Length: 109
Picture 1 (cartoon, rainbow, N blue to C red):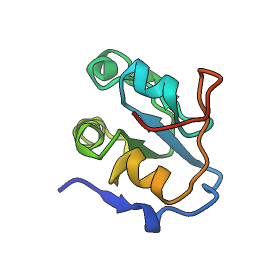
Picture 2 (cartoon, one colour):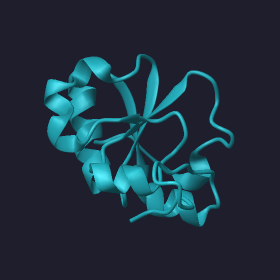
Picture 3 (cartoon, helix red, strand yellow):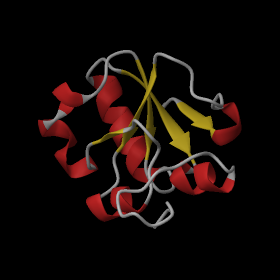
């Protein structure tokens, strides 16, 4: 079973010691992401697991499918991970803060 949390179960603001891992593709990341998140696209994750933060990690993608795969994989590697069900779409819908790398207002694409 994949550890999963809905947006209403994620503290706001995020508590110290909880990191965010975003496994979306580069274009998705550029358009809008959670501030201070670590970005490792899902396809690159096996080669970059050393970059996953220590401690508890909230794993996000657009809707929760790719992050569920990443959560399962990282859990098998011994990481303390939880999948955000509903992903960045639910994060955005809940009015949670995002930043972009494009200069435009952040959005989920």
